[in-house]
Length: 383
View 1 (cartoon, helix red, strand yellow):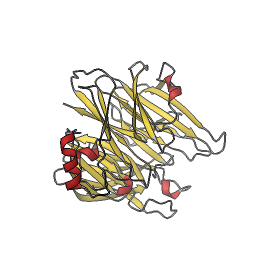
View 2 (spheres, one colour):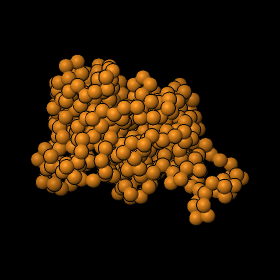
View 3 (cartoon, helix red, strand yellow):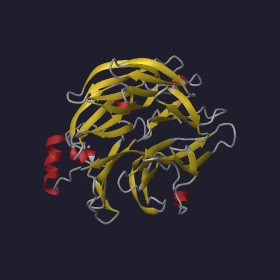
View 4 (tube, one colour):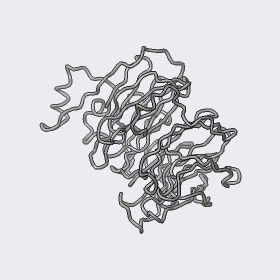
């Protein structure tokens, strides 16, 4: 359904001084929680990953976790300890996280800013103010951030959204480009930026287009008609764009579409529900949590694997040992580009800590660990 909804361990001897000098008498510095989950390893390139936990909307509970392959330790809730002087910590609803250059960027949707940190230690560098910001993409010296522009509110008259162009050196917004209604994920192919417009605030009058922006002029040059309530956008190794539709939860089901970026036309429809997905090599890993108000009014959950070359669904369940039964509500999926381990997060009931599951490339559970509330978005750290 539509989402409306900082890594250094300080010595204990200095914690009291930090609390006294940086926080008020009624504030308590949250200490990160380390959990050993696997034996230390010596990775060739990927040394760890950050996991952004969305947190419940309105509760200021967005948190950041980090898994370190070199120690085998999962560190839960590292931002407050690493950044004791930052008031209110990360903020309200983490919606995306990515590493670009030497910086780690986290989109904090309902707090209306993008948090910028050092990629190696998650120390605060600055923030970029963008209202109702949603997702990130990068190209050259710039970051591109989708924005719903208006307040977090269902409104049949909600305004058009836009994409903000941000200078990654100064962290200043240098330009904006108006796109469709409530734009979500975006991706760069060549010199074009593709933006999935959802129109989610204008239900039932959803948007159904992908905006195409020319990056040289930073203007919208066309809209591609795809399907209602678009959400995710991923680019495969051949430059094809994979776009998901959430559907309307009634008669229009969720589906997955393919756009040829040389012609900017839809060339295929997979006929498969897609909630979240990622592409690694020639494989697309997805899970779907499909809901219908009309039929059984229950969630239908599946974990599919697709060959992006043939667009064939290879399996409807990439978890092969039956442990998918432990997962109550999948909420994020990622693949380690080096080890090919598959990660799936479980948001459970959305109000309590979630769980992160690690699976081997052949779909067998390796380990699991407790996360923050609503674990969702991954960023892999490389040497």
